[in-house]
Length: 123
Image (tube, rainbow, N blue to C red; front, side, top):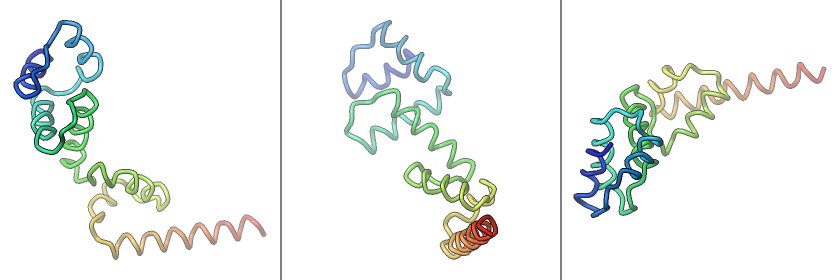
């Protein structure tokens, strides 16, 4: 963690202390170092916010999702809602996520099934 914070300090001039290293270890010490460095560099390229552990965690998570073929963070909530509502398997949904016709067909089918269950339940 001290190495990661030393890399961060080359840009933002933070003073790395033992307490800071401990705090960051508690927050993101479980993450792979190389993935964390990639996340740090991505944060530098895409944000002007002061680097926090949450930035690293989110970017490492996004990278892991991307490697699994899942949608980026900006679409994650919609993806999870889609999977929950339609009952699709995550891997299947991820493989077709960028196909709007496939998504529309699955949503229509799920709406129809939901409507049919509602009718059956009220009878």
